Length: 426
Ligand code: HMG
Image (cartoon, rainbow, N blue to C red; front, top):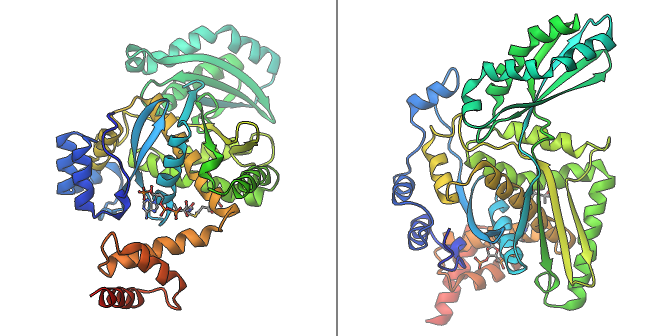
Protein backbone atom coordinates (compact mmCIF):
# COMPACT_ATOMS: atom_id res chain seq x y z
CA UNK A 1 0.00 0.00 0.00
CA UNK A 2 1.29 3.46 -0.89
CA UNK A 3 2.89 5.56 1.84
CA UNK A 4 1.82 9.03 0.69
CA UNK A 5 0.73 11.59 3.27
CA UNK A 6 1.96 12.03 6.84
CA UNK A 7 -0.46 10.71 9.46
CA UNK A 8 0.71 13.24 12.06
CA UNK A 9 -2.25 14.81 13.84
CA UNK A 10 -4.73 12.13 12.62
CA UNK A 11 -5.85 11.79 16.25
CA UNK A 12 -6.93 15.41 16.46
CA UNK A 13 -9.30 15.25 13.46
CA UNK A 14 -13.03 14.57 13.38
CA UNK A 15 -14.25 11.31 11.80
CA UNK A 16 -15.30 13.33 8.70
CA UNK A 17 -11.82 14.83 8.40
CA UNK A 18 -10.27 11.38 8.88
CA UNK A 19 -12.32 10.02 5.95
CA UNK A 20 -10.86 12.84 3.86
CA UNK A 21 -7.33 11.87 4.94
CA UNK A 22 -8.08 8.24 4.04
CA UNK A 23 -9.26 9.41 0.62
CA UNK A 24 -6.22 11.66 0.11
CA UNK A 25 -3.96 8.77 1.09
CA UNK A 26 -5.84 6.31 -1.15
CA UNK A 27 -5.92 4.17 1.97
CA UNK A 28 -8.88 2.13 0.71
CA UNK A 29 -11.07 1.71 -2.38
CA UNK A 30 -13.85 4.16 -3.29
CA UNK A 31 -16.40 1.43 -2.53
CA UNK A 32 -14.86 0.90 0.92
CA UNK A 33 -14.79 4.61 1.61
CA UNK A 34 -18.47 4.90 0.62
CA UNK A 35 -19.34 2.08 3.01
CA UNK A 36 -17.51 3.94 5.80
CA UNK A 37 -19.20 7.25 5.01
CA UNK A 38 -22.64 5.65 4.80
CA UNK A 39 -21.80 3.87 8.07
CA UNK A 40 -23.01 0.67 6.44
CA UNK A 41 -23.41 -1.95 9.16
CA UNK A 42 -24.28 -5.61 9.38
CA UNK A 43 -27.85 -6.01 8.03
CA UNK A 44 -30.39 -7.40 10.51
CA UNK A 45 -31.28 -10.29 8.18
CA UNK A 46 -27.60 -11.31 7.90
CA UNK A 47 -27.11 -11.01 11.65
CA UNK A 48 -30.12 -13.28 12.09
CA UNK A 49 -28.34 -15.96 10.04
CA UNK A 50 -25.16 -15.66 12.13
CA UNK A 51 -26.45 -16.23 15.66
CA UNK A 52 -29.56 -17.60 17.30
CA UNK A 53 -32.44 -15.74 18.98
CA UNK A 54 -31.40 -12.43 17.44
CA UNK A 55 -32.97 -9.28 18.87
CA UNK A 56 -30.54 -6.58 17.63
CA UNK A 57 -26.93 -5.66 16.86
CA UNK A 58 -24.26 -4.10 19.09
CA UNK A 59 -21.95 -1.44 17.64
CA UNK A 60 -18.35 -0.84 18.76
CA UNK A 61 -15.87 1.86 17.70
CA UNK A 62 -13.88 1.07 14.54
CA UNK A 63 -10.58 2.99 14.72
CA UNK A 64 -7.39 3.14 12.70
CA UNK A 65 -3.82 2.81 13.91
CA UNK A 66 -1.91 4.20 10.92
CA UNK A 67 1.53 3.70 9.53
CA UNK A 68 2.81 0.34 10.70
CA UNK A 69 5.99 -0.61 8.85
CA UNK A 70 5.96 -4.42 8.61
CA UNK A 71 8.48 -6.32 6.49
CA UNK A 72 9.24 -3.11 4.59
CA UNK A 73 5.61 -2.32 3.73
CA UNK A 74 3.33 0.25 5.32
CA UNK A 75 -0.07 -0.83 6.67
CA UNK A 76 -2.91 0.99 8.38
CA UNK A 77 -4.47 -1.28 10.96
CA UNK A 78 -8.22 -1.21 11.69
CA UNK A 79 -8.93 -1.77 15.38
CA UNK A 80 -12.21 -2.51 17.13
CA UNK A 81 -12.02 -1.74 20.83
CA UNK A 82 -14.12 -0.06 23.48
CA UNK A 83 -11.10 0.76 25.68
CA UNK A 84 -9.68 4.31 25.70
CA UNK A 85 -5.93 4.75 25.06
CA UNK A 86 -5.44 1.41 23.28
CA UNK A 87 -5.47 2.91 19.76
CA UNK A 88 -3.40 5.91 20.90
CA UNK A 89 -0.79 3.57 22.41
CA UNK A 90 -0.64 1.42 19.26
CA UNK A 91 -0.28 4.49 17.00
CA UNK A 92 2.41 5.91 19.26
CA UNK A 93 4.42 2.69 19.28
CA UNK A 94 4.02 2.23 15.50
CA UNK A 95 5.59 5.64 15.00
CA UNK A 96 8.68 4.95 17.12
CA UNK A 97 9.12 1.45 15.74
CA UNK A 98 8.81 2.66 12.13
CA UNK A 99 11.57 5.19 12.75
CA UNK A 100 13.71 2.40 14.22
CA UNK A 101 13.31 0.14 11.14
CA UNK A 102 9.84 -1.41 11.56
CA UNK A 103 8.65 -4.92 12.37
CA UNK A 104 9.93 -8.19 10.92
CA UNK A 105 7.60 -11.15 11.01
CA UNK A 106 7.97 -14.87 10.50
CA UNK A 107 5.18 -17.37 9.96
CA UNK A 108 6.76 -20.62 11.13
CA UNK A 109 4.01 -22.86 9.78
CA UNK A 110 0.30 -22.61 9.08
CA UNK A 111 -1.61 -25.74 9.90
CA UNK A 112 -4.50 -26.51 12.22
CA UNK A 113 -4.66 -29.48 14.58
CA UNK A 114 -7.60 -31.75 15.25
CA UNK A 115 -7.76 -34.50 17.84
CA UNK A 116 -9.64 -37.72 18.52
CA UNK A 117 -9.33 -38.99 22.10
CA UNK A 118 -9.61 -42.79 22.27
CA UNK A 119 -10.65 -44.60 25.47
CA UNK A 120 -11.19 -48.18 26.63
CA UNK A 121 -8.16 -49.68 24.85
CA UNK A 122 -7.19 -53.21 25.86
CA UNK A 123 -3.91 -53.37 23.93
CA UNK A 124 -2.27 -49.94 23.57
CA UNK A 125 0.76 -51.17 21.61
CA UNK A 126 -1.36 -53.02 19.06
CA UNK A 127 -3.68 -50.00 18.75
CA UNK A 128 -0.79 -47.60 18.10
CA UNK A 129 0.80 -49.96 15.57
CA UNK A 130 -2.48 -50.44 13.69
CA UNK A 131 -3.21 -46.70 13.54
CA UNK A 132 0.28 -45.79 12.35
CA UNK A 133 0.20 -48.57 9.73
CA UNK A 134 -2.98 -46.93 8.31
CA UNK A 135 -1.76 -43.34 8.47
CA UNK A 136 -2.16 -42.82 4.71
CA UNK A 137 -5.67 -44.34 4.65
CA UNK A 138 -6.69 -42.13 7.56
CA UNK A 139 -5.43 -38.88 5.97
CA UNK A 140 -7.13 -39.91 2.73
CA UNK A 141 -10.38 -40.54 4.62
CA UNK A 142 -10.07 -37.10 6.23
CA UNK A 143 -9.53 -35.47 2.83
CA UNK A 144 -12.48 -37.30 1.29
CA UNK A 145 -14.66 -35.79 4.02
CA UNK A 146 -13.70 -32.28 2.83
CA UNK A 147 -12.67 -32.49 -0.84
CA UNK A 148 -12.98 -28.72 -1.51
CA UNK A 149 -9.92 -27.91 0.63
CA UNK A 150 -7.88 -30.48 -1.29
CA UNK A 151 -8.92 -28.78 -4.56
CA UNK A 152 -7.64 -25.47 -3.11
CA UNK A 153 -4.24 -27.01 -2.39
CA UNK A 154 -4.79 -27.82 1.29
CA UNK A 155 -5.87 -30.91 3.22
CA UNK A 156 -4.72 -33.34 5.93
CA UNK A 157 -0.93 -33.49 6.15
CA UNK A 158 0.17 -35.64 9.06
CA UNK A 159 -1.11 -37.87 11.83
CA UNK A 160 0.63 -38.39 15.18
CA UNK A 161 -0.17 -40.15 18.46
CA UNK A 162 0.31 -39.36 22.14
CA UNK A 163 -0.51 -41.31 25.28
CA UNK A 164 -1.86 -38.94 27.94
CA UNK A 165 -3.46 -40.35 31.11
CA UNK A 166 -6.24 -42.76 30.16
CA UNK A 167 -6.33 -41.50 26.60
CA UNK A 168 -4.65 -42.40 23.36
CA UNK A 169 -4.86 -39.14 21.45
CA UNK A 170 -4.70 -38.98 17.68
CA UNK A 171 -3.67 -35.60 16.26
CA UNK A 172 -4.24 -34.65 12.64
CA UNK A 173 -2.46 -31.63 11.08
CA UNK A 174 -4.46 -29.93 8.36
CA UNK A 175 -3.45 -27.25 5.89
CA UNK A 176 -6.58 -25.05 5.87
CA UNK A 177 -5.21 -22.48 3.38
CA UNK A 178 -6.96 -19.08 3.86
CA UNK A 179 -9.65 -20.42 6.22
CA UNK A 180 -9.40 -20.79 9.99
CA UNK A 181 -10.76 -24.25 9.30
CA UNK A 182 -12.67 -25.12 12.49
CA UNK A 183 -15.61 -26.70 10.63
CA UNK A 184 -13.33 -28.34 8.12
CA UNK A 185 -11.14 -29.93 10.79
CA UNK A 186 -14.14 -30.99 12.90
CA UNK A 187 -15.67 -32.70 9.85
CA UNK A 188 -12.40 -34.51 9.17
CA UNK A 189 -11.99 -35.64 12.78
CA UNK A 190 -15.54 -36.97 12.94
CA UNK A 191 -14.94 -38.76 9.63
CA UNK A 192 -11.86 -40.64 10.86
CA UNK A 193 -13.15 -41.43 14.37
CA UNK A 194 -15.04 -44.67 13.42
CA UNK A 195 -11.98 -45.99 11.54
CA UNK A 196 -9.79 -45.15 14.56
CA UNK A 197 -12.20 -47.08 16.81
CA UNK A 198 -12.05 -50.05 14.46
CA UNK A 199 -8.22 -49.99 14.29
CA UNK A 200 -7.67 -49.44 18.01
CA UNK A 201 -10.45 -51.56 19.47
CA UNK A 202 -11.36 -48.54 21.66
CA UNK A 203 -14.05 -45.86 21.57
CA UNK A 204 -13.82 -42.22 20.53
CA UNK A 205 -14.61 -39.95 23.49
CA UNK A 206 -14.61 -36.91 21.24
CA UNK A 207 -13.38 -35.61 17.88
CA UNK A 208 -12.64 -31.88 17.66
CA UNK A 209 -10.26 -29.14 16.54
CA UNK A 210 -7.65 -27.92 19.06
CA UNK A 211 -7.30 -24.19 19.65
CA UNK A 212 -3.78 -24.77 20.94
CA UNK A 213 -2.57 -24.15 17.39
CA UNK A 214 1.12 -24.91 17.86
CA UNK A 215 1.45 -25.54 14.11
CA UNK A 216 0.42 -21.92 13.41
CA UNK A 217 3.11 -20.05 15.33
CA UNK A 218 3.93 -16.51 14.23
CA UNK A 219 6.75 -14.27 15.49
CA UNK A 220 7.03 -10.48 15.25
CA UNK A 221 10.26 -8.70 16.15
CA UNK A 222 11.20 -5.05 16.35
CA UNK A 223 13.79 -2.70 17.77
CA UNK A 224 13.39 0.73 19.29
CA UNK A 225 16.31 3.15 19.19
CA UNK A 226 17.20 4.56 22.59
CA UNK A 227 16.77 8.15 21.37
CA UNK A 228 13.01 7.48 21.05
CA UNK A 229 12.70 6.47 24.70
CA UNK A 230 13.88 9.87 25.89
CA UNK A 231 15.88 12.81 24.57
CA UNK A 232 17.95 12.55 27.74
CA UNK A 233 20.54 9.76 27.20
CA UNK A 234 20.73 8.73 30.84
CA UNK A 235 16.95 8.60 31.19
CA UNK A 236 16.68 6.62 27.94
CA UNK A 237 19.21 4.05 29.23
CA UNK A 238 17.37 3.80 32.50
CA UNK A 239 14.07 3.20 30.69
CA UNK A 240 15.68 0.58 28.45
CA UNK A 241 16.97 -1.35 31.49
CA UNK A 242 13.56 -1.14 33.12
CA UNK A 243 11.83 -2.38 29.97
CA UNK A 244 14.06 -5.46 30.10
CA UNK A 245 13.22 -5.92 33.78
CA UNK A 246 9.50 -5.51 33.07
CA UNK A 247 9.82 -8.31 30.54
CA UNK A 248 11.66 -10.51 33.08
CA UNK A 249 9.02 -9.82 35.71
CA UNK A 250 6.35 -11.23 33.38
CA UNK A 251 8.45 -14.42 33.02
CA UNK A 252 8.56 -15.14 36.76
CA UNK A 253 5.24 -13.85 38.16
CA UNK A 254 1.96 -15.15 36.69
CA UNK A 255 0.07 -12.27 38.33
CA UNK A 256 2.10 -9.83 36.25
CA UNK A 257 2.21 -12.16 33.19
CA UNK A 258 -1.58 -12.14 33.00
CA UNK A 259 -1.74 -8.32 32.86
CA UNK A 260 1.28 -8.17 30.54
CA UNK A 261 -0.50 -10.52 28.13
CA UNK A 262 -3.79 -8.65 28.52
CA UNK A 263 -1.94 -5.60 27.20
CA UNK A 264 -0.74 -7.63 24.19
CA UNK A 265 -4.29 -8.83 23.53
CA UNK A 266 -5.55 -5.23 23.68
CA UNK A 267 -4.01 -4.90 20.22
CA UNK A 268 -4.43 -8.47 18.96
CA UNK A 269 -8.14 -8.71 19.79
CA UNK A 270 -8.86 -5.31 18.24
CA UNK A 271 -7.53 -6.38 14.83
CA UNK A 272 -8.88 -9.93 15.12
CA UNK A 273 -12.34 -8.45 15.79
CA UNK A 274 -12.05 -5.91 12.97
CA UNK A 275 -11.30 -8.73 10.53
CA UNK A 276 -14.29 -10.81 11.68
CA UNK A 277 -12.14 -13.57 13.12
CA UNK A 278 -12.80 -15.82 16.12
CA UNK A 279 -11.13 -13.91 18.96
CA UNK A 280 -12.01 -16.58 21.55
CA UNK A 281 -9.94 -19.08 19.56
CA UNK A 282 -7.00 -16.68 19.34
CA UNK A 283 -7.21 -15.85 23.07
CA UNK A 284 -7.45 -19.53 24.06
CA UNK A 285 -4.46 -20.49 21.90
CA UNK A 286 -2.39 -17.50 23.07
CA UNK A 287 -2.97 -18.16 26.77
CA UNK A 288 -2.31 -21.89 26.38
CA UNK A 289 0.95 -21.02 24.61
CA UNK A 290 1.85 -18.66 27.46
CA UNK A 291 1.74 -21.69 29.77
CA UNK A 292 3.66 -23.99 27.45
CA UNK A 293 6.64 -24.23 29.85
CA UNK A 294 4.39 -25.41 32.68
CA UNK A 295 4.12 -21.93 34.24
CA UNK A 296 2.04 -19.09 32.81
CA UNK A 297 4.49 -16.49 31.41
CA UNK A 298 4.56 -13.25 29.48
CA UNK A 299 4.29 -13.91 25.74
CA UNK A 300 6.80 -11.23 24.71
CA UNK A 301 10.46 -10.63 25.53
CA UNK A 302 12.29 -7.31 25.62
CA UNK A 303 16.07 -6.98 25.98
CA UNK A 304 18.34 -3.98 26.18
CA UNK A 305 21.22 -4.15 23.71
CA UNK A 306 23.57 -1.55 25.14
CA UNK A 307 26.09 -1.80 22.31
CA UNK A 308 23.47 -1.28 19.59
CA UNK A 309 21.73 1.43 21.63
CA UNK A 310 18.38 -0.31 21.20
CA UNK A 311 15.73 -2.27 22.99
CA UNK A 312 14.76 -5.42 21.12
CA UNK A 313 11.30 -6.95 21.31
CA UNK A 314 9.97 -10.30 20.22
CA UNK A 315 6.52 -11.89 20.43
CA UNK A 316 5.53 -15.42 19.38
CA UNK A 317 2.11 -17.03 19.66
CA UNK A 318 -0.29 -19.19 17.65
CA UNK A 319 -2.18 -17.08 15.10
CA UNK A 320 -4.56 -19.32 13.13
CA UNK A 321 -6.26 -16.40 11.45
CA UNK A 322 -8.53 -16.49 8.40
CA UNK A 323 -9.19 -14.22 5.45
CA UNK A 324 -12.01 -16.38 4.07
CA UNK A 325 -14.93 -18.28 5.54
CA UNK A 326 -17.07 -17.87 8.65
CA UNK A 327 -18.79 -14.48 8.82
CA UNK A 328 -15.88 -12.65 7.13
CA UNK A 329 -17.61 -12.03 3.78
CA UNK A 330 -20.94 -11.11 5.38
CA UNK A 331 -20.14 -8.05 7.47
CA UNK A 332 -19.67 -4.72 5.58
CA UNK A 333 -17.43 -3.32 8.36
CA UNK A 334 -15.17 -6.38 8.09
CA UNK A 335 -14.98 -5.83 4.32
CA UNK A 336 -13.89 -2.24 4.99
CA UNK A 337 -11.23 -3.56 7.40
CA UNK A 338 -9.81 -5.90 4.73
CA UNK A 339 -9.90 -3.03 2.22
CA UNK A 340 -7.88 -0.84 4.61
CA UNK A 341 -5.37 -3.66 5.06
CA UNK A 342 -4.95 -4.05 1.29
CA UNK A 343 -6.56 -7.54 1.24
CA UNK A 344 -3.64 -9.47 2.75
CA UNK A 345 -3.44 -13.26 2.67
CA UNK A 346 -3.75 -15.18 5.95
CA UNK A 347 0.02 -15.36 6.59
CA UNK A 348 0.47 -11.60 6.08
CA UNK A 349 -2.54 -10.82 8.28
CA UNK A 350 -1.18 -13.10 11.02
CA UNK A 351 2.12 -11.16 10.96
CA UNK A 352 0.27 -7.82 11.17
CA UNK A 353 -1.76 -8.98 14.16
CA UNK A 354 1.31 -10.18 16.08
CA UNK A 355 3.15 -6.92 15.23
CA UNK A 356 0.23 -4.94 16.65
CA UNK A 357 0.35 -7.05 19.83
CA UNK A 358 4.06 -6.28 20.20
CA UNK A 359 3.51 -2.55 19.58
CA UNK A 360 0.74 -2.46 22.18
CA UNK A 361 2.95 -4.23 24.70
CA UNK A 362 5.82 -1.81 24.07
CA UNK A 363 3.65 1.28 24.64
CA UNK A 364 2.13 -0.12 27.84
CA UNK A 365 5.52 -1.19 29.28
CA UNK A 366 7.15 2.12 28.39
CA UNK A 367 4.36 3.96 30.19
CA UNK A 368 4.46 1.58 33.18
CA UNK A 369 8.20 1.84 33.78
CA UNK A 370 8.21 5.56 32.94
CA UNK A 371 5.54 8.04 33.98
CA UNK A 372 3.02 5.35 34.98
CA UNK A 373 -0.09 4.35 33.08
CA UNK A 374 -2.37 7.01 34.53
CA UNK A 375 -0.37 9.97 33.17
CA UNK A 376 -1.16 8.97 29.56
CA UNK A 377 -4.80 8.27 30.41
CA UNK A 378 -5.20 11.68 32.09
CA UNK A 379 -3.53 13.39 29.15
CA UNK A 380 -5.88 11.70 26.71
CA UNK A 381 -8.87 12.63 28.83
CA UNK A 382 -7.68 16.24 29.02
CA UNK A 383 -7.21 16.30 25.23
CA UNK A 384 -10.71 15.07 24.52
CA UNK A 385 -12.17 17.54 27.04
CA UNK A 386 -10.27 20.38 25.32
CA UNK A 387 -11.65 19.32 21.93
CA UNK A 388 -15.16 18.90 23.38
CA UNK A 389 -14.92 22.42 24.84
CA UNK A 390 -14.33 23.69 21.29
CA UNK A 391 -10.55 24.29 21.37
CA UNK A 392 -8.77 24.49 18.04
CA UNK A 393 -5.79 22.25 17.25
CA UNK A 394 -3.45 25.13 18.22
CA UNK A 395 -5.25 25.80 21.51
CA UNK A 396 -5.34 22.13 22.64
CA UNK A 397 -1.78 21.83 24.11
CA UNK A 398 -2.23 24.89 26.32
CA UNK A 399 -5.68 23.76 27.55
CA UNK A 400 -4.32 20.25 28.24
CA UNK A 401 -1.42 21.65 30.23
CA UNK A 402 -3.72 23.77 32.41
CA UNK A 403 -6.35 21.07 32.77
CA UNK A 404 -3.75 18.59 34.07
CA UNK A 405 -2.85 20.93 36.91
CA UNK A 406 -6.47 22.00 37.59
CA UNK A 407 -8.37 20.71 40.61
CA UNK A 408 -11.26 19.27 38.56
CA UNK A 409 -10.63 17.52 35.26
CA UNK A 410 -14.00 18.07 33.61
CA UNK A 411 -15.70 19.80 30.69
CA UNK A 412 -16.69 22.84 32.74
CA UNK A 413 -13.03 23.49 33.67
CA UNK A 414 -11.95 22.98 30.06
CA UNK A 415 -14.52 25.53 28.85
CA UNK A 416 -13.43 28.03 31.50
CA UNK A 417 -9.72 27.65 30.62
CA UNK A 418 -10.55 28.08 26.93
CA UNK A 419 -12.65 31.20 27.58
CA UNK A 420 -9.88 32.71 29.76
CA UNK A 421 -7.27 31.92 27.12
CA UNK A 422 -9.31 33.57 24.37
CA UNK A 423 -10.13 36.58 26.58
CA UNK A 424 -6.42 37.12 27.32
CA UNK A 425 -5.63 36.93 23.60
CA UNK A 426 -8.38 39.39 22.50
P1 HMG B 1 2.38 10.90 24.48
O1 HMG B 1 3.84 10.76 24.39
O2 HMG B 1 1.81 11.86 25.42
O3 HMG B 1 1.77 11.14 23.02
O4 HMG B 1 1.76 9.45 24.77
P2 HMG B 1 1.80 12.47 22.14
O5 HMG B 1 0.61 13.28 22.50
O6 HMG B 1 3.15 13.06 22.18
O7 HMG B 1 1.57 11.84 20.69
C1 HMG B 1 2.53 10.99 20.07
C2 HMG B 1 1.81 10.05 19.11
O8 HMG B 1 1.00 9.11 19.85
C3 HMG B 1 0.82 10.74 18.18
O9 HMG B 1 1.50 11.24 17.07
C4 HMG B 1 -0.10 9.60 17.81
O10 HMG B 1 0.48 8.75 16.87
C5 HMG B 1 -0.21 8.89 19.15
P3 HMG B 1 0.90 12.50 16.23
O11 HMG B 1 -0.31 12.01 15.53
O12 HMG B 1 0.58 13.56 17.24
O13 HMG B 1 2.02 12.81 15.32
N1 HMG B 1 -1.32 9.46 19.93
C6 HMG B 1 -2.62 9.26 19.64
N2 HMG B 1 -3.23 8.57 18.68
C7 HMG B 1 -4.57 8.54 18.68
N3 HMG B 1 -5.32 9.19 19.59
C8 HMG B 1 -4.75 9.93 20.57
C9 HMG B 1 -3.33 9.98 20.63
N4 HMG B 1 -2.48 10.56 21.46
C10 HMG B 1 -1.24 10.25 21.03
N5 HMG B 1 -5.52 10.58 21.42
C11 HMG B 1 0.06 7.82 24.99
C12 HMG B 1 0.40 9.30 25.01
C13 HMG B 1 -1.36 7.60 25.43
C14 HMG B 1 0.23 7.30 23.55
C15 HMG B 1 1.08 7.08 25.92
O14 HMG B 1 0.99 7.61 27.20
C16 HMG B 1 0.86 5.58 26.01
O15 HMG B 1 1.21 4.84 25.10
N6 HMG B 1 0.32 5.09 27.14
C17 HMG B 1 0.00 3.66 27.30
C18 HMG B 1 -1.46 3.47 27.14
C19 HMG B 1 -1.89 2.02 27.13
O16 HMG B 1 -1.09 1.10 27.07
N7 HMG B 1 -3.19 1.80 27.16
C20 HMG B 1 -3.76 0.47 27.14
C21 HMG B 1 -4.82 0.39 28.18
S1 HMG B 1 -4.10 0.10 29.74
C22 HMG B 1 -4.14 -1.62 29.80
O17 HMG B 1 -5.18 -2.20 29.80
C23 HMG B 1 -2.92 -2.45 29.58
C24 HMG B 1 -1.91 -2.58 30.70
O18 HMG B 1 -2.43 -3.01 31.93
C25 HMG B 1 -0.95 -3.63 30.15
C26 HMG B 1 0.20 -3.92 31.02
O19 HMG B 1 0.09 -3.78 32.25
O20 HMG B 1 1.25 -4.32 30.43
C27 HMG B 1 -1.22 -1.28 30.91
